[in-house]
Image 1 (cartoon, rainbow, N blue to C red):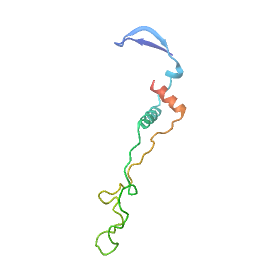
Image 2 (tube, helix red, strand yellow):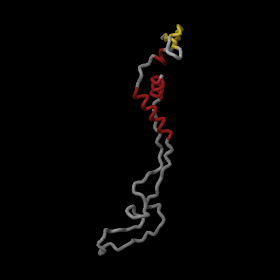
Image 3 (cartoon, one colour):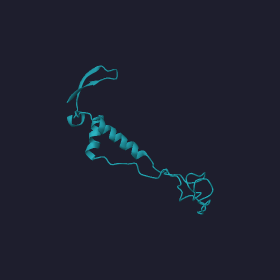
Image 4 (spheres, rainbow, N blue to C red):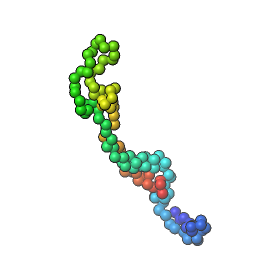
Length: 114
């Protein structure tokens, strides 16, 4: 496929360049580009976030008050997430955010970007 060469102002220079139809003649696939960018950004994430849960908090394991007769809700451990200084319920855990894309999909995304 022949393409006219333009100068920096956008005027035609009179030259023509031969471009490969396999690379530059591809119908752009927006979703492939989206997935490729999403994978790149996901791979940049470190994923080392962590908070202490009730098993990791330092403290006694004794029952903090008797089960019945106090008039308040039952409580077993001071490390529970409902108490100040207790563990975090369902807190963040270290994980890997990366995911796999097929080789041909990555190739299509790169060609679509051109």
